[in-house]
Length: 325
Ligand code: UFG
Image (cartoon, rainbow, N blue to C red; front, side):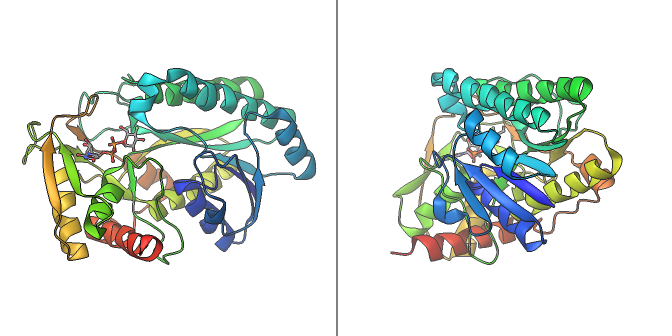
């Protein structure tokens, strides 16, 4: 297949590009490099351009007949989305619509969308399945939900088939050591802890130790990047076979607390580092765990890196290889 990966120079996109290319697909990455890195695109062609730029899209779609488009090019910082919502609505919603309209114009029928657990907002129950009410509590989550709604309407009106994959906490790195997580600024727990372990950061701060959880720290569902990518490939195959749109929650179904992630990271890295307890971060639910039964049943998805230790090992290998001084 020929697949356009929008945002293929970012963390999840670059792993996806690799997996698709190694499964004999022809992959083209479109990325404006605002958050991604040129050297993260190890496979296929990289086109530097914006997903909201009609000229770039026209050129790409005239030149190639894509079987599908995968979209990873969203801004993802919850805190920033509260301070600067315009940036989020513009890129995550408006630019995505430009992309979808171009797909309609060029009759490309299959779209895989990176959605998020943030569309559910404060959990009313856990684990969170697809039937959970959708009530995002920040602009980031709202932009993702808006696109999910847009996709429903584009299916009804234009027959554009889509699969929305709601990631819980993507973590870990390419087990070959070729790719990893490189956000700037970094805000995610696992890379921040490993920066503390490698000495690139003075400490790791725990945002709140007074949550109603076993050890008082927040619980999240960490799912390995390769498992997430695998779900995309399975979802695309399924969508092409059935001709139906779908939505799946993707996680391991197991929650780990911030404290457990820190303890496991100390064990995996063999390093001790400073841990500082600070106030809660605004907008953090106590527990976010996925019920991925639907993805397991319908896609035959079965995460292979379901141990926190293995997930952290791959991330640590990346931290050691890539950032070694
Ligand atoms: N945390 C700390 N210290 C840090 C960083 C994070 O204690 O320095 C805690 C957070 O408070 C949270 C947990 O670690 O409890 C995980 O935080 P992340 O920032 O790594 O991830 P989130 O759960 O906040 O966010 C993830 C995705 C978002 C998505 C969200 C869905 O990264 O894109 O899940 O709710 F929106």
